[in-house]
Length: 86
Image (cartoon, rainbow, N blue to C red; front, side, top):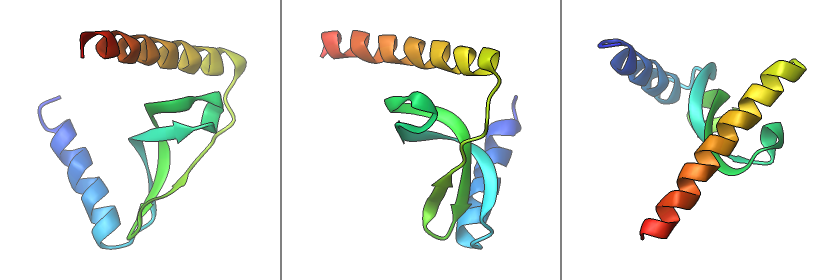
C-alpha cells in the first residue's frame, strides 16, 4: 500500500493533463448515480482535460448493489455523526 496511492494519483493526473480520457476508480460526488445521493463514493469515472468527464455506471449484480448501498449507508452515517460535532 506504500506506492499504490502515489501511483494512482500519478495515473489520474496524467489522464487529466494529457486528456487521455482513461476510466479509473475515483471517489466522486454522486447525485443519483447508482441510486446514491449527495455522497462521495469510489466508482469508475472517465478522466480527461475537463477532470471528471463522465461517471461510468456499470450494471451490478444484486449482491454487489446491496454491498454498495451498505457502504454508502455507512458513509452517510459518518457524515451525519460529523454534523453533530460541528
